[in-house]
Image (cartoon, rainbow, N blue to C red):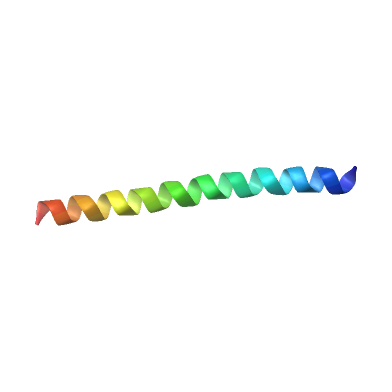
Length: 39
């Protein structure tokens, strides 16, 4: 039971961090695209 609980907590944490990382990468890509479009 405890192991299952830990796994679910770990999964939720990784999902949150993955969302943050993907969002950050998307923002960086967008900024780079906008910068190249301006030049």
